[in-house]
Image (cartoon, rainbow, N blue to C red; front, side):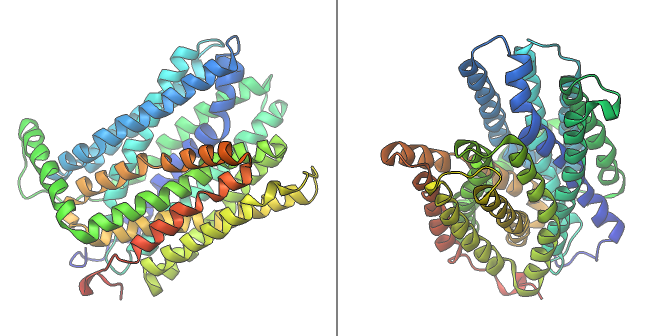
Length: 432
């Protein structure tokens, strides 16, 4: 990256706006409305256990598909300079499937599960190419700040639309809607439109470096497969990349487990749904300035020290969270306030650890092979939330204490942090 000319500000903003675009799917659809609506609307005539099972199948299927495809697709996109093409295709899949949820009638849970799976595949796969394009809009000196700008805009963009969608559901009459159910369906359509509109700047403005030679599709597949296998061997031979991916898998598993289980943990200790939604909004809007701040600090002091600080913060968060349920919950009182405090603490480091991990990895991989290497990076991310939930569930059953189960996640941060300490940047890769 260091030999590239300084990208134009317009290119950087256009790239970062894709985070603004697709974060609406993460907030409104994944975290907000789909799990509840799937149970209460599309599968309302079926047992709760069945809807939970099929929702889990949808999520797992999407994760497995993306984990398998990511490195191969990344290799193909590198050879043909097709990152924007692949991103457009997968984003289009996600947009169409998300918008299609608006048209599904009550009880049609098989189609809802299928469309959600395909929307997740589109969302997750497009991020592979979005992440790898960071090498086209940044240099070694700016990559930390550029990465954090993406996450920062994602927080604020996803938060704005989520806030609007929450108001639609809580006050449907304000928007000329008859019911909360109708409002949720319009929320899915609003996400599709939002995602489409704010994807256009990246597609139209960001310049993707041309490949040394233009290959035909058959040659791309053949050469891409060979490059994928070569990169896989290279990762095992390159100690720094291998160590980082191992460390990343462990600590991001902890991060994703905190994200995935926060609402469930809040419900288990009696936090009302309205306060859980408020906590989600706190994460979005507090996360915006802190993602930018962490990116600036990473650029000034180095990504690795800041990632280690974020890991230490997450360790303290799990320690604090494990003690939340030690006392009877006073709804509207101190327990809810502590949960808000926990949400704010997560918001302060969540965007930072994600953005700096991306920028750190961008420094240690070859820029002309960023697609396939970020394919492996995203593959590790998709295999995250495997150890964490297993740890939480097993420890909770063995001890009979949900707080101890939450505390078990800290092992992932400790081990991941210790491995990250062994990762070294070469002199030319150190930020200046």
